[in-house]
Image (cartoon, rainbow, N blue to C red; front, side):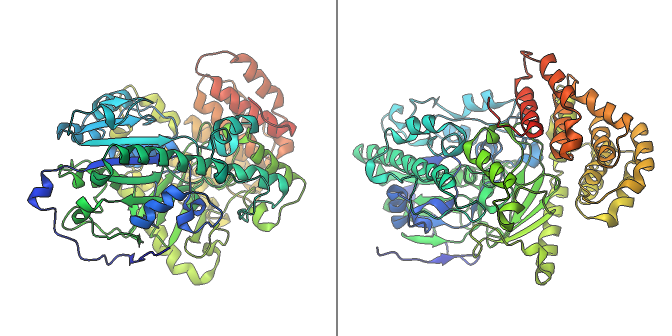
Length: 636
């Protein structure tokens, strides 16, 4: 295969002049082929010799393949919010999966501006925009959004922006649905030439036990991605048959990393980094700084995608859009860093922040008491995660595999170029101390400057949602002093030398500072027995419920105090979902023998809220707790 590989890093080829006047009159059609839950390691053109992705590989052969393209989130809804608005979740409070908070009215879906410029816009068919204004965004963005939508309903000669989202590679196919459902959804219509058998010779990530059962489960990844590739081939064939390929710019990319344990939902390269291929027809080569068959290291992130589309068609980019176009303007931005966020997923609360320069991925974990493989109902229903828990229980895992099942460090640095599966944490190597400091400072600076509102517990965001949006809350400096809150959070996982400071912060006037002090103390791996009287005294004075709960967990870790037990019991029965969720999170991370003493209260909560509207998802999480405490498999 003859490919002309040109690496375009921070120093790009000189930009071509903007399109000639004659070209400007012909607006390019733009086609987005988006797909679910896929990392570049499993695509043929990215080097996987076992992958069966000929359609994407062909696009890369004649197009541009990005090696440093990143989602802003590790799960779909926060990622899609950023894609449709060009805004990061930190500023809008949309980081938690399936959250439903209002965003400012001035924030539109970027296809709205394409429609105003005369484009026909269609979406087939996923939206999942993760905010209370989603229906308004859908209505203003799309001429049609349905599983029947496509460019074919536009007026004659009208330019189009069309999105097709393939669901075949979704986590439901790659791991969570039963094997029979996967066979029906993926294998039924998969071309036989594309099939990867359960005993295929593909490379299994080294953080999994290389057993026949794990290989069987992992074969789903290859077949699901290949079925996606097959679907894209069908769409492109129709495009060509209708004589539109030579006037259409194609974006082909996934919404975040691979739908496997320690992939999707993990603040790692495997959670953020996406395959991204652009194909540009000859008619519009002047809009691109690249040629054909090019590999570029240019750093791009999801907030840039909508801005780039607007730039390609000559539409003014609104000031509120945080992304910058990476082509089709005289001076495209060359980013030094991209930023990622991992927040709550279903009913598992998490907060990690990441920074990458394309070569390294730095992650700061603010909930290090949790392992990479966290307790999440949607994940734990899967055979592959059940197998992992069984391997861990039976002591079949090596040190690398064990590590992802245990509480985490609070800092990670991985070499994305030379450590394919991200198993060597460079943050533990003294020679990388200066690099770590650089990334740490950049991460903290970005969180403070953006006033990252997801550092406020969802308990409070939910209580205030009828009065203030998260966007407004983050700007109330006295209520949310971002610098103080994030500095308190930065103590999490820093070891015994910060215990005294964390205890001091329990008395802080700001409730979010007290919250992060309590979370940090719960994250302490050592015994805090000598501080127990002081902690119990602080517990009795604590008024902010989320902070009080975590502090109760700290006390329970180090004693069997009745007042701490009562705080957790009350939260398990509380009608506020978020307090119940925190209580369950404590039980999932306490010593197993101690957690079992809460079994009767967990069952009482399930009985109390059985069939109650809005409590189903919390009850699912309760069953995950029961699974952990009784050592049984989780089923819906």
